[in-house]
Amino acid sequence: MLQDRTTAVRQGEIDGLGIDPHRPLLVVDVDEVLGLFMAGFGSFLEGRGLEFRVERFALFQNIYRPGEAQHLEIAEGKRHFDDFFRYGAGDIEPSPGAAKALRALAARASVVILSNAPAQARLSRARWLGRHGLDYPLVLSSGPKGPLTAAMAARTAGPTAFVDDLLSNLDSVAESAPAAARFQHVADARLRPFAPSAPERHTRIDDWAELHDAITAAIAA
Ligand SMILES: [Mg+2]
Image (cartoon, rainbow, N blue to C red; front, side, top):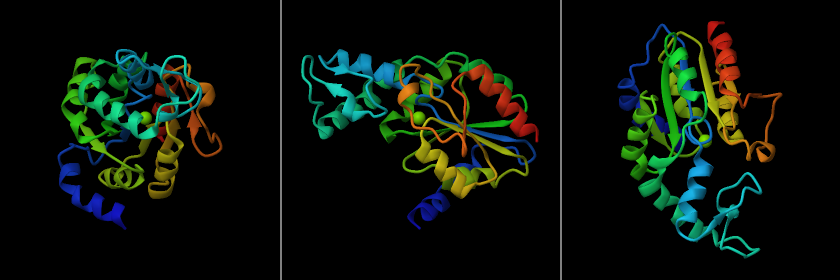
């Protein structure tokens, strides 16, 4: 219910995205899809004398003080996470092949970047996208991505494709926008073995060139 109301409030923002009512729509995530978030967050933490150990598909449970076996308090990890979005998220590396793939896909589809990031990230995130040739309309959000994706998909008669690293978002889109083609992409090679997947529900493709071909086929349908 809250989700529905939030989405209703954002209809004006969706109006401004320039979604072509006759073309396919591609909705794509940033962290671990277009950008190597974990690697950047790890470097940021190192600068603060901490360690990020890629031991599970999680954020806060992977932050340690050097030499310690117990991860940092979750609340403390969240503070570093918020700081990273404020000061450091502009420094992450783009995922290999992502910009080239989106450039090709944008020739036949409207592209919208849908990122769950805090409001303080908007400026640095938009600048980051521009700097790396990923200058497409940006929507910042929080929570499951299904309702917003459904609201955007409703703006076109064409097919919709959705890309994210998180099962929770893919499942949410399956529920709210079941006709959308769903792809899971995990950009960081170190994270891939830990990332939960459900290939029977969402196609998992970790390589952007391959993902480009699969999205092209999906939106041509
Ligand atoms: Mg992500």
